[in-house]
Length: 64
Image (cartoon, rainbow, N blue to C red; front, side, top):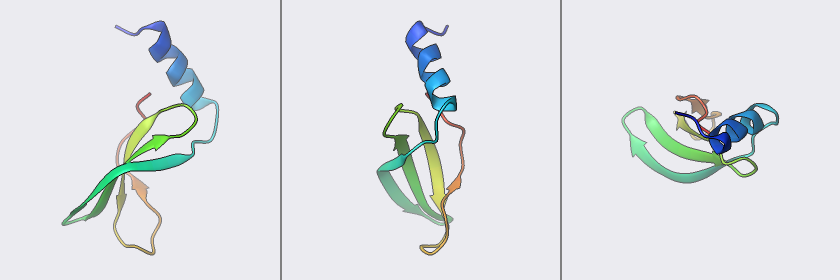
């Protein structure tokens, strides 16, 4: 069941461009997995960085 706070967080997550900040990361056989959080709204997602020169690829949806 969603609370008002969760609904508000989802609305905020969809109304701005996120500024993702890495909270933690670890190396896997596929590359480096980054657990990121938006500095503004607190939404989270998981990114995979396959190569240091490549852009990270989101491997999950945003979770508010």
